Length: 247
Image (cartoon, rainbow, N blue to C red; front, side, top):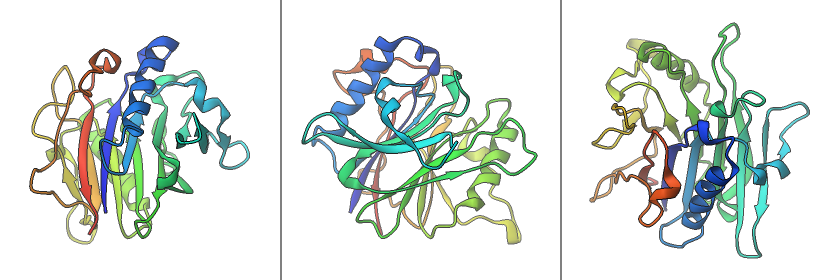
């Protein structure tokens, strides 16, 4: 089975402009249901608070994480897990979006360790027909690369799954991620494109995976938006596209 994975920091400064955010989401929806790729999954960061997400229900009482189906037509139903990190602070919100037929409905929220202030949670969803694969979306803090790397190092061991994909804005280069040594050595793999992922420079958006990601013959493709939709993809980060083959 193959998955087509997008990860994108949508740049939340647009979040208060419903037209801009609506255009971005419309373009993503068109890609999701286009049939042009196999099994599409989208991980979003700084995704604002879209009108469509208002119909989602919290996964537990008082939870800031919500999930559920959003129906556009009888043939277009998406499943979304959405994390409102801070009320009215749309730059920190996260989401994962896929077609409803690709979601089992099982979702997860991973919370930062106690007494670690200023760190965001991570959201994940289980993908159907994969034997239990979970895909997660994260947005690491941007204060400095070492802090961002430490955040990822703190969060990844909390994933209690045999196979997973962890995508998003890591706010540090792949070479700066600390995998540890000895007993702390983590058995995960970093996969990134070959070019910068942010307008100001840096390779900050990529995926980390465990027991799941293989690179096909044409490798991992990196794109700046989707052809014909460039105007809808204005952001200070470029959309990152990965082809994933399950072992």
